[in-house]
Length: 206
Image (cartoon, rainbow, N blue to C red; front, top):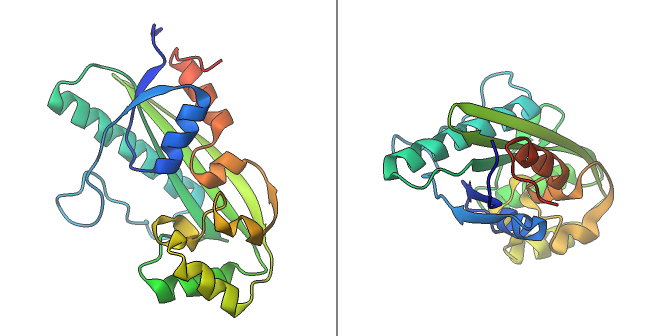
């Protein structure tokens, strides 16, 4: 298949993913899904017992892409590929989600302080009967953080919509000692994997 336009639907509310697609030169429209718990949600982000964080991220990205395609068909929109993504921050096999409140954010950052953790970022594309996904895993080392700088960072409000309670592209960049892997994957959308995946659907970004 080949598309005359580099155009997709983005099934995500993330401003960071929008910025990365713009950086890549990909034209897109937002396709908003219902998130959260309950029957009204378009997908269920519950972690299965014993599920590895990388497998969780891949599974959720695929679910989001499927839900986005279902929404496209329901609304009878023009048929372009639907891209979705999921990012999981993990210490070992434990996933650190978005903090529920201030104290939860503080607790997460204290756990990440002075440790190496992993960021698993999956991207999935759905078009007609085809659904493919790719995964990026990045090793991130965070320096030792003082209690007062953790609390100042949390007070900035930046951690509250971010897995693991930090944004590497924001103020938390000063906390990161080393990364091995994809910086854009830690931000929320791995550029290399996304470009390769889109190209396999006929949308070349270069």
